[in-house]
Length: 123
Image (cartoon, rainbow, N blue to C red; front, top):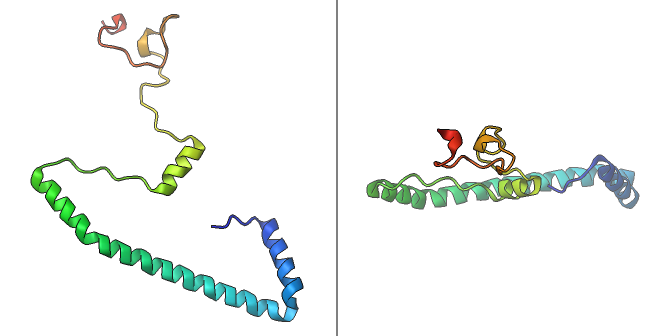
């Protein structure tokens, strides 16, 4: 969540030791752990409430989709997944990209493109 490396944790511990002293540091660490646990519990409760609040509209939408005979709505990727994919360059590539047989492989042929219906290599 905060991307704390071991070096940063050690530095924070040393700063806390200087400011709080050895007698108050364990109590402060225990209190910080309790606060963090409460925040996580409240966050989980909020997520559960949001899921239950959105369940009824989602069910109504699904029933309407089925009545109209519409195709299933694809699931939208999470924002976190979209950001990670954009940063790492993880993009779905078509199955025909990178194949050596695409387009016949002539010197003037743009490699990596799918063969067209009028391509002589398909005859």
